Each structure stands twice: as C-alpha cells, then as structure tokens.
Amino acid sequence: MNRWRWLIVGVVVAVIVAIPAALAFRQATRHVTTGERIPGLKTPEKLILYSIDGTEDFEANRDARLATAEELFRGYPVLGKTEVTSENDRNELIAVLQDGIVHHDGIAAKCFWPRHAILASEGGKTFEIVICFQCQQYTLDGRHFPLISKRAEQKFNDYLRQHHVEIAP
Image (cartoon, one colour):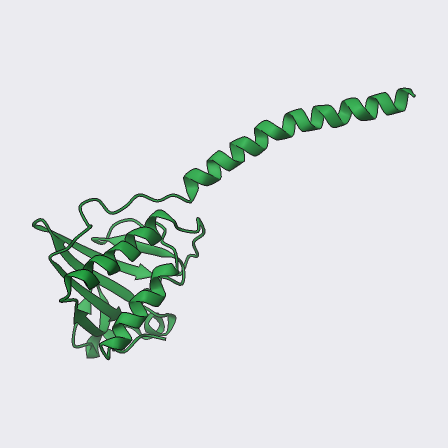
C-alpha cells in the first residue's frame, strides 16, 4: 500500500511541475512565431517585384555571374522584374508579404539564397526587401534577417509568371 501512495504522490508532483512548464513553453512559442510588420508599408504608391538569382549555383560562380549581369538588386543579378501598376495588386502583394512576416513558422535555415525582391515606395519612404523563402528570412534595406513564412512565395511566383518574368530555380 505504501508503494501505491508514493506512486500517486509522484504523479501529482509531476503534473504540478509540468503544467507551469507547458504554459511557459506555449507563451514562449507564441512570441517566437509572431513577427512584426514592416512599419510604414501597407499601401505603397509604387511597387516593383523582382526575380533575382541568389541561388547556391550563383554563389559558386559569383564573380563571373556578376560580371555578366545586366542589372543588380542589392548585389544579386536580376532575372526579371515587373512594376505592379494596379493598386489592388500592390496592396494584395504587400498584405501577403506582411502576413508572412507576422505569421512566420519560427524556423530558419542558414542559406540565404534569395530569389525574390521588392522595391516599394510609400509616404516618401523607400523599402528594399530581399527574400529567401528557402531559409525563410528576408532583409530590409540590407539589414537583419527576420523570419518570413513560405506562404507568400506562391503568390509572388504566380504574379511573376503572369507577367512573363523568369523565376530562379
């Protein structure tokens, strides 16, 4: 009988310890997977969506590829670009971008081989955003590597294809 009493006490203690730990983990996870929107970027007056080549293959042949590139965006060769002239399309692409930043997956790889970029202007401010959906990170004006979800990638690719812009593999 004594053994059962100790077993029950042990289970009760384990539950008492586990509940606060689980709540703390849940709160910490909630914080990690919520990014902050890019301030001041909601309804841009101008937006250019780029397809860039920041792939691993580009890294291996960087000097040769840079020498033959017709245009660079933040140091990456531009494969193609399209100006988003429709206000609805601009707002939709930025909404998808911001949603991916706010609701990222909380996981990033170390590669940073970007294939997409955005040049946007709103309220007299210019935003240069380079995005690697492979590692789920982006840079804003060449700084930091915040997280972004892969969800926006399909929307960007669809828009680029619709406008006959080559997409990096």
